[in-house]
Length: 336
Image 1 (cartoon, rainbow, N blue to C red):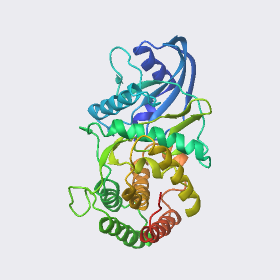
Image 2 (image 1 turned 90 degrees about the vertical axis):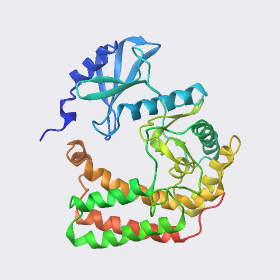
Image 3 (image 1 turned 60 degrees about the vertical axis):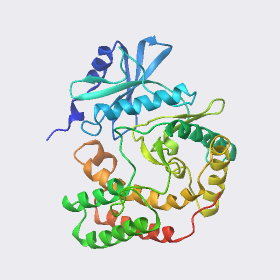
């Protein structure tokens, strides 16, 4: 059975751009995005000073038009607050367009590289802008975009994997035991919507970037960070946008966290109680990631890019990582 993206040929991308008044000069480069299809297109004539644009074709069926438009509106709010987020261009009165079966948007190209996360000044700079993002995010709730919760990031993915026989039988019982133990720990440690039927949270929830890892921050020495790819914007605790910027051993992560929070608190108070969420959030992402790969396996880009996925060795590795996370969640949280 063919996948919808198989029809998205270079000619189709050029036709889609032409349909919104942007004419490519024939130079088109696919960017490394798997959830959506994203292309850098050089234009015959610059548009509002942009000689090249980035066209994003959303994965059919993942988000509704209302959810995508709410992401775009959030990006616009950030830009109006002079926060360096990269949002879509307004073309023909809209930021969202249709071409065949695809919804797509067009954004300006931004240069930059991944930030140096061992540099305290860089982390402080990022922390200041994350605080400003969250100040905007706290102004009003999302109406249609989802909540980052245990149900959506652990329970439902676990059940989907089991129902679709995605885990080899020789490791399924081990994985399920580790997964259930991890979910129980998260439910025991924090009041979190979706855990054991809870509908409230002891943490303040706000609109987030949602996927703030180093690959979604473009850094330039003069201008600092540009935040890209709000495709996973959702409601959750502020620390969700901080923890993916931490790496290394505990001492390194502690130092990085200190610099981030120092910058953050120049603009907004940070609730230290949320530091207890870092390892639960990491665990949720771990569970969700395996289900994300399994759900996308009919897309030819996924077997080609992730050939190691799905084997018994892969799932045994997941068991080990879940067991490590269970240990991490039992340890005292980082401090800042």
